[in-house]
Length: 218
Ligand code: C5P
Image (cartoon, rainbow, N blue to C red; front, side, top):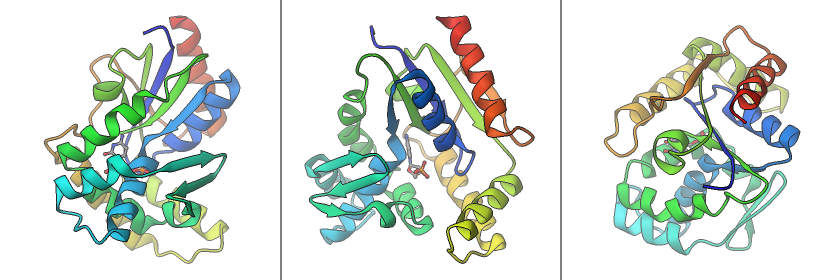
């Protein structure tokens, strides 16, 4: 398409969100946090009393939800869900609803609508493989489960939220397992993705590498 897209995919707590937001900021592009849509769908389903294993039911709720994004704040059907959206427990619920093809389908067009001029940075699990297969740059970000658990731990503690590193690591592994092994849009790098292991890289280094790849492709 005419709108340039950068896809940033990878597992839980790999730093995708931070990297994508930073790239969008530097390039003046729009940002799609696709995980937030799955998280919101899970919260909407729960609020509506729809079981998370009811794919058709959750899809219906997901298609009908009114979401508003403004900076770090998110409203679902007029309710501020900004804090609830970021909870680890909400991520786990999102992972459960995201296995349903009907739910993924319901969110597909919503995601496409984020691709507007001058460009988009999209973060998720299947941005490069399914939603934006024509993306000009696809980055697949990885880091070891230990590294990711440690980062998530520090992030939570710094926000004053108590956390247990062993249970975080276990949750991260369980979520990776489910995301990689589902049949609908499993987490995997696109064939033409660049792999970036950021275990030993700071955010600025990761940003610079991506900007370098982006300029090579433009
Ligand atoms: O990235 P985030 O932790 O917000 O994603 C929450 C969950 O939503 C993931 O564990 C995954 O199951 C699901 N998801 C997805 N496809 C995306 C983004 C998120 O299946 N593009």
